[in-house]
Image 1 (tube, rainbow, N blue to C red):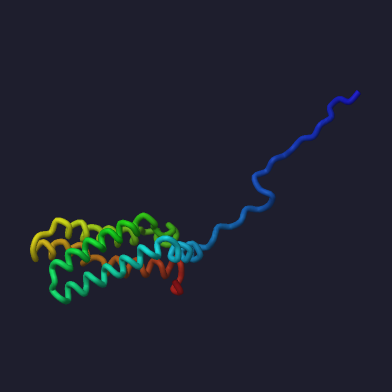
Image 2: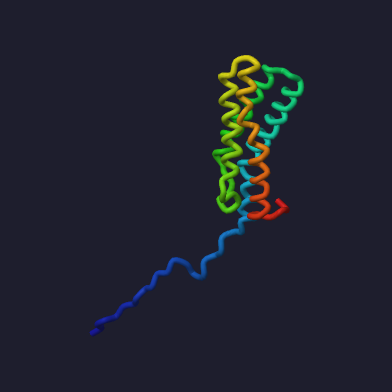
Length: 143
């Protein structure tokens, strides 16, 4: 007679120690070269067009370019950088200002309307400077 025969199985979650997560720099590089890259390129192009239209004093082109920057910023906001790279949220602030200018441009009328539409962009260089400093601290200067 066999009584008490059997085995006890122990289930563990992993066969060994858990792998460490990628560094913040590695996460940032993956993000930077991933789906956000095309949207970032569109945003840079649109911002250059705003600048060129402004230099030419062409209100219709400024309005159109502002609207495009707003759309590009909206798409870029859908793929934020890793939280470790931007813990203070400067990236979101940067895009929010650009989106606001684009939204304002859609309803702008005349020169005064365009000037008001561009107002949120005045804060962008300061936010960009803070973001750059933060990225230098979180992911390194060689980004």
